[in-house]
Length: 456
Image (spheres, rainbow, N blue to C red):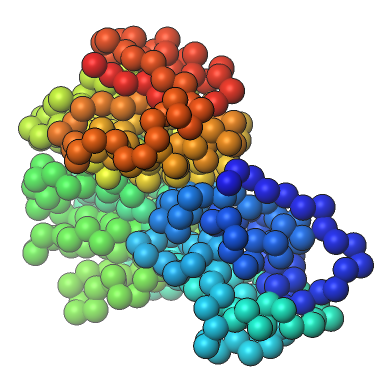
């Protein structure tokens, strides 16, 4: 495992594997994630890509998701079985099963280029390209194909006009931003300031507007308080999210997925890229601002925090302390356990998007590879950490200065599986109190390997 690199083979024979790898490299892909022994790994290395080795397909996929989420670039996985739970992320899965539609090396070039093109259009998603072993070994003397990204889609001018008229007339607007808005941070911030509108995000849209902004209610889309605020609003603008607006409230939706737009005349649907379309909408509005939005946002933020404490109060302090321990633009990685879902989503504020993601230790590896200059920390419950020994071993092999904070959050699922942190070469320390984390995390960032920090 670890990161493997290859300087290339000079004038060596080129084959279908080279066709795939060189097409990726020609289009700016420089990193892939996979398991050792995958048939494509050698070809990727020969084309100059780095291949980050993970213990299994699941870990490789989680690393690639985090890489895509933190970097904004597609994640590439040399996979045995293909996508399992990639969700709304731009991921390219390379498999070598055989029996698919790719029959020649030139067809492999076209298929990879087509997949990269598809990933630049519409809602982010996973795409699988299967190249049979016999095609990987087939002689090839062609050239890679370059993909020209399409210009961002801007919603039609009539829709922009109608949406602007609704917002200009609104006295109590509300904005909801989801994961489809992560690249529109500046534009949405400018828009809410012009509207004087509170904004709430989903967990996937966390940080689209600085969690500390006076108009932000944080990543609180799941709370009853947000639904009630939407019902009390005269216009709700939803950007890149499937948030359900209450009946009877005028809704404006901006999305690249036409299926999420209104089709029954009950609202304004703007089919377009979030960044370009929000900018166009902002340009159609007058440069005015009202202070009442700050008052509404403060009340909504307070209500959401109280509702977050109903099931996440036990995780508030550890997230507050970790916020102090991690630099403002550091990345926090969580897991699929309560300390993340009920804690970090709501109690770990971030100033910008792409600074928080789930996925455990593999995701921390992906985030570290995506942004090598940014510190990355992990916060996991004991249940999520119990089976992470081999994933931790991969982080050790990479030499990542990675603090892995482990807390009891009710997710225990039995004893640890496999080797202990010390067995795989990681450091391990204990924090008696949450306040001890500040110094221990600082020490972990100076280490030459991951440090497991057990709290309590």
